[in-house]
Length: 278
Image 1 (cartoon, rainbow, N blue to C red):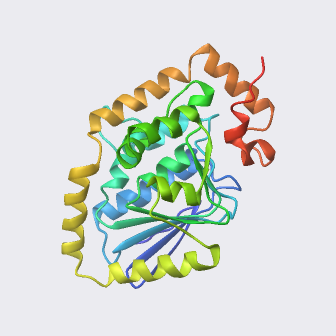
Image 2: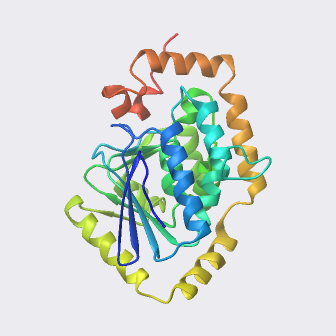
Protein backbone atom coordinates (compact mmCIF):
# COMPACT_ATOMS: atom_id res chain seq x y z
CA UNK A 1 0.00 0.00 0.00
CA UNK A 2 1.45 3.35 -1.07
CA UNK A 3 0.37 6.92 -0.41
CA UNK A 4 1.97 9.02 -3.15
CA UNK A 5 0.09 11.98 -4.64
CA UNK A 6 1.12 15.07 -6.63
CA UNK A 7 -0.76 17.53 -4.40
CA UNK A 8 -0.56 15.80 -1.00
CA UNK A 9 2.66 15.07 0.88
CA UNK A 10 2.37 11.99 3.09
CA UNK A 11 4.30 10.36 5.91
CA UNK A 12 3.34 7.19 7.78
CA UNK A 13 4.80 6.60 11.22
CA UNK A 14 3.58 4.38 14.07
CA UNK A 15 0.08 4.09 12.66
CA UNK A 16 -0.35 7.81 12.00
CA UNK A 17 -0.58 8.95 8.37
CA UNK A 18 0.19 12.65 7.96
CA UNK A 19 -1.34 14.11 4.79
CA UNK A 20 -0.15 17.64 4.04
CA UNK A 21 -2.16 19.52 1.41
CA UNK A 22 0.27 21.07 -1.07
CA UNK A 23 -1.77 22.36 -4.00
CA UNK A 24 -0.45 25.88 -4.32
CA UNK A 25 -0.45 28.76 -1.85
CA UNK A 26 -4.26 28.80 -1.43
CA UNK A 27 -4.79 25.01 -1.45
CA UNK A 28 -7.93 25.45 -3.53
CA UNK A 29 -10.14 22.36 -3.68
CA UNK A 30 -9.82 21.93 -7.42
CA UNK A 31 -9.30 19.08 -9.83
CA UNK A 32 -5.85 17.99 -8.62
CA UNK A 33 -6.47 18.16 -4.88
CA UNK A 34 -9.93 16.55 -5.05
CA UNK A 35 -8.55 13.78 -7.30
CA UNK A 36 -5.78 13.04 -4.80
CA UNK A 37 -8.09 13.16 -1.78
CA UNK A 38 -10.45 10.73 -3.50
CA UNK A 39 -7.53 8.38 -4.19
CA UNK A 40 -6.32 8.62 -0.59
CA UNK A 41 -9.76 7.89 0.85
CA UNK A 42 -10.37 5.03 -1.60
CA UNK A 43 -7.08 3.45 -0.51
CA UNK A 44 -8.05 3.67 3.16
CA UNK A 45 -11.43 2.09 2.47
CA UNK A 46 -9.87 -0.72 0.45
CA UNK A 47 -7.26 -1.55 3.10
CA UNK A 48 -6.30 0.83 5.88
CA UNK A 49 -3.45 -1.54 6.74
CA UNK A 50 -1.16 0.00 9.33
CA UNK A 51 -3.01 3.33 9.29
CA UNK A 52 -4.96 4.00 12.48
CA UNK A 53 -5.15 7.81 12.36
CA UNK A 54 -5.10 10.28 9.45
CA UNK A 55 -3.94 13.84 10.19
CA UNK A 56 -4.67 16.41 7.48
CA UNK A 57 -2.80 19.72 7.51
CA UNK A 58 -1.42 22.24 5.01
CA UNK A 59 1.95 23.11 3.56
CA UNK A 60 0.85 26.76 3.58
CA UNK A 61 0.95 28.61 6.91
CA UNK A 62 -1.71 31.03 5.66
CA UNK A 63 -4.29 28.73 4.04
CA UNK A 64 -5.45 25.32 5.21
CA UNK A 65 -7.71 25.48 2.16
CA UNK A 66 -9.15 28.78 0.96
CA UNK A 67 -12.29 27.22 -0.62
CA UNK A 68 -13.22 25.30 -3.76
CA UNK A 69 -11.81 26.36 -7.12
CA UNK A 70 -14.76 28.42 -8.31
CA UNK A 71 -13.39 28.46 -11.86
CA UNK A 72 -13.54 24.65 -12.09
CA UNK A 73 -16.73 23.52 -10.34
CA UNK A 74 -17.78 20.98 -13.03
CA UNK A 75 -14.26 19.60 -13.25
CA UNK A 76 -13.66 19.03 -9.53
CA UNK A 77 -17.22 17.70 -9.19
CA UNK A 78 -16.38 15.11 -11.85
CA UNK A 79 -13.36 14.03 -9.79
CA UNK A 80 -15.43 13.87 -6.59
CA UNK A 81 -18.02 11.73 -8.37
CA UNK A 82 -15.46 8.96 -8.82
CA UNK A 83 -15.74 8.25 -5.08
CA UNK A 84 -19.45 7.49 -5.12
CA UNK A 85 -22.20 5.74 -6.96
CA UNK A 86 -25.01 7.00 -9.20
CA UNK A 87 -26.47 10.25 -7.90
CA UNK A 88 -23.44 11.03 -5.77
CA UNK A 89 -21.67 13.39 -8.15
CA UNK A 90 -20.79 16.08 -5.64
CA UNK A 91 -18.01 17.22 -3.36
CA UNK A 92 -20.47 16.97 -0.48
CA UNK A 93 -21.03 13.27 -0.98
CA UNK A 94 -17.30 12.65 -1.25
CA UNK A 95 -16.75 14.48 2.05
CA UNK A 96 -19.60 12.44 3.55
CA UNK A 97 -17.62 9.37 2.50
CA UNK A 98 -14.50 10.84 4.11
CA UNK A 99 -16.42 11.31 7.36
CA UNK A 100 -17.07 7.56 7.46
CA UNK A 101 -13.58 6.38 6.47
CA UNK A 102 -12.52 3.49 8.78
CA UNK A 103 -9.71 5.39 10.54
CA UNK A 104 -9.79 8.35 12.90
CA UNK A 105 -9.30 11.65 11.06
CA UNK A 106 -7.94 14.88 12.50
CA UNK A 107 -7.77 18.27 10.78
CA UNK A 108 -4.84 20.35 12.02
CA UNK A 109 -5.59 23.88 10.86
CA UNK A 110 -3.29 26.79 10.38
CA UNK A 111 -4.44 29.75 8.32
CA UNK A 112 -7.77 30.15 6.57
CA UNK A 113 -10.30 27.34 6.16
CA UNK A 114 -13.30 28.74 4.34
CA UNK A 115 -16.08 27.35 2.18
CA UNK A 116 -15.10 23.91 0.91
CA UNK A 117 -11.88 24.12 2.91
CA UNK A 118 -13.88 24.43 6.12
CA UNK A 119 -16.17 21.65 4.93
CA UNK A 120 -13.11 19.43 4.43
CA UNK A 121 -12.10 20.10 8.04
CA UNK A 122 -15.67 19.48 9.26
CA UNK A 123 -15.67 16.08 7.55
CA UNK A 124 -12.83 15.04 9.84
CA UNK A 125 -13.55 13.51 13.24
CA UNK A 126 -11.75 16.28 15.12
CA UNK A 127 -10.41 19.78 14.38
CA UNK A 128 -7.57 21.46 16.25
CA UNK A 129 -6.44 24.93 15.21
CA UNK A 130 -3.66 27.44 15.71
CA UNK A 131 -4.92 30.33 17.81
CA UNK A 132 -2.45 32.68 16.14
CA UNK A 133 -3.53 32.14 12.53
CA UNK A 134 -6.60 29.95 11.99
CA UNK A 135 -9.71 31.53 10.45
CA UNK A 136 -12.93 29.67 9.67
CA UNK A 137 -15.84 30.74 7.51
CA UNK A 138 -18.65 29.82 5.16
CA UNK A 139 -18.82 32.81 2.84
CA UNK A 140 -21.24 31.35 0.28
CA UNK A 141 -24.32 33.34 1.36
CA UNK A 142 -22.38 36.51 0.62
CA UNK A 143 -22.25 35.48 -3.03
CA UNK A 144 -25.84 34.27 -3.28
CA UNK A 145 -25.18 30.55 -2.71
CA UNK A 146 -25.09 28.29 0.34
CA UNK A 147 -22.58 25.77 1.73
CA UNK A 148 -23.03 22.80 -0.61
CA UNK A 149 -20.51 20.24 0.65
CA UNK A 150 -21.75 19.46 4.13
CA UNK A 151 -21.19 22.76 5.92
CA UNK A 152 -24.87 23.41 6.59
CA UNK A 153 -25.36 19.92 7.96
CA UNK A 154 -22.28 19.83 10.20
CA UNK A 155 -22.59 23.36 11.54
CA UNK A 156 -26.30 23.06 12.35
CA UNK A 157 -25.60 19.96 14.39
CA UNK A 158 -22.50 21.32 16.14
CA UNK A 159 -23.48 24.94 16.76
CA UNK A 160 -27.26 24.77 17.09
CA UNK A 161 -29.80 26.65 15.03
CA UNK A 162 -29.10 30.25 15.99
CA UNK A 163 -25.31 30.12 15.81
CA UNK A 164 -25.45 28.17 12.54
CA UNK A 165 -27.65 30.97 11.18
CA UNK A 166 -25.08 33.55 12.28
CA UNK A 167 -22.21 31.64 10.66
CA UNK A 168 -23.91 30.68 7.39
CA UNK A 169 -26.19 33.64 6.68
CA UNK A 170 -23.73 36.16 8.12
CA UNK A 171 -20.93 34.73 5.92
CA UNK A 172 -18.24 36.29 8.11
CA UNK A 173 -14.86 35.06 9.39
CA UNK A 174 -14.39 33.47 12.82
CA UNK A 175 -11.09 33.19 14.64
CA UNK A 176 -10.05 29.96 16.33
CA UNK A 177 -10.98 31.03 19.87
CA UNK A 178 -14.53 31.96 18.88
CA UNK A 179 -14.84 28.80 16.76
CA UNK A 180 -13.86 26.76 19.82
CA UNK A 181 -16.36 28.62 22.01
CA UNK A 182 -19.13 27.92 19.49
CA UNK A 183 -18.30 24.21 19.32
CA UNK A 184 -17.15 24.46 15.71
CA UNK A 185 -13.72 22.99 16.52
CA UNK A 186 -12.32 20.90 19.36
CA UNK A 187 -9.62 23.26 20.61
CA UNK A 188 -7.78 26.46 19.81
CA UNK A 189 -4.11 26.12 20.74
CA UNK A 190 -1.04 28.36 20.53
CA UNK A 191 0.79 27.65 17.28
CA UNK A 192 3.84 26.44 19.18
CA UNK A 193 1.75 23.79 20.94
CA UNK A 194 -0.43 22.61 18.05
CA UNK A 195 1.90 20.04 16.47
CA UNK A 196 2.87 18.42 19.74
CA UNK A 197 -0.70 18.20 20.97
CA UNK A 198 -2.02 16.61 17.78
CA UNK A 199 0.93 14.24 17.54
CA UNK A 200 0.43 13.00 21.11
CA UNK A 201 -3.32 12.51 20.63
CA UNK A 202 -2.89 10.76 17.27
CA UNK A 203 -0.23 8.40 18.63
CA UNK A 204 -2.35 7.69 21.71
CA UNK A 205 -5.34 6.70 19.57
CA UNK A 206 -3.14 4.71 17.17
CA UNK A 207 -1.84 2.64 20.10
CA UNK A 208 -5.33 1.39 21.04
CA UNK A 209 -6.90 -1.84 19.66
CA UNK A 210 -8.26 -0.72 16.29
CA UNK A 211 -11.56 -2.60 16.23
CA UNK A 212 -12.82 -0.84 19.36
CA UNK A 213 -11.86 2.55 17.96
CA UNK A 214 -13.59 1.79 14.65
CA UNK A 215 -16.72 0.61 16.44
CA UNK A 216 -16.84 3.78 18.53
CA UNK A 217 -16.48 5.93 15.41
CA UNK A 218 -19.27 4.06 13.63
CA UNK A 219 -21.60 4.47 16.62
CA UNK A 220 -20.90 8.19 16.95
CA UNK A 221 -21.28 8.73 13.20
CA UNK A 222 -24.63 6.93 13.20
CA UNK A 223 -25.86 9.33 15.88
CA UNK A 224 -24.47 12.57 14.48
CA UNK A 225 -23.87 12.58 10.73
CA UNK A 226 -26.46 13.87 8.26
CA UNK A 227 -28.45 11.50 6.10
CA UNK A 228 -27.05 11.24 2.55
CA UNK A 229 -30.29 12.67 1.13
CA UNK A 230 -29.72 15.93 3.01
CA UNK A 231 -26.15 16.21 1.74
CA UNK A 232 -27.34 15.55 -1.82
CA UNK A 233 -30.02 18.22 -1.45
CA UNK A 234 -27.49 20.85 -0.33
CA UNK A 235 -25.18 19.94 -3.21
CA UNK A 236 -27.99 20.27 -5.75
CA UNK A 237 -29.04 23.63 -4.29
CA UNK A 238 -25.44 24.90 -4.43
CA UNK A 239 -25.19 23.93 -8.09
CA UNK A 240 -28.47 25.71 -8.85
CA UNK A 241 -27.62 28.89 -6.93
CA UNK A 242 -24.17 29.45 -8.45
CA UNK A 243 -25.78 29.59 -11.88
CA UNK A 244 -28.13 32.46 -10.95
CA UNK A 245 -27.34 35.85 -12.55
CA UNK A 246 -26.90 37.69 -9.23
CA UNK A 247 -24.55 35.03 -7.90
CA UNK A 248 -22.50 35.09 -11.12
CA UNK A 249 -22.36 38.88 -10.89
CA UNK A 250 -21.07 38.81 -7.31
CA UNK A 251 -18.49 36.12 -8.08
CA UNK A 252 -17.32 38.08 -11.11
CA UNK A 253 -16.93 41.19 -8.95
CA UNK A 254 -14.91 39.28 -6.36
CA UNK A 255 -12.78 37.68 -9.06
CA UNK A 256 -12.03 41.09 -10.58
CA UNK A 257 -10.89 42.26 -7.14
CA UNK A 258 -8.60 39.33 -6.36
CA UNK A 259 -10.62 36.20 -5.56
CA UNK A 260 -8.46 33.06 -5.86
CA UNK A 261 -5.23 35.06 -5.85
CA UNK A 262 -2.84 35.88 -3.04
CA UNK A 263 -3.80 39.28 -1.73
CA UNK A 264 -5.96 41.24 0.65
CA UNK A 265 -9.33 40.04 -0.68
CA UNK A 266 -8.64 36.37 0.07
CA UNK A 267 -7.09 37.28 3.41
CA UNK A 268 -10.23 39.17 4.43
CA UNK A 269 -12.87 37.35 2.39
CA UNK A 270 -15.49 37.54 5.13
CA UNK A 271 -15.24 41.32 4.95
CA UNK A 272 -15.01 41.44 1.16
CA UNK A 273 -18.29 39.63 0.45
CA UNK A 274 -20.15 42.42 2.27
CA UNK A 275 -18.54 45.15 0.16
CA UNK A 276 -20.08 44.25 -3.20
CA UNK A 277 -20.83 47.29 -5.33
CA UNK A 278 -22.68 47.26 -8.66
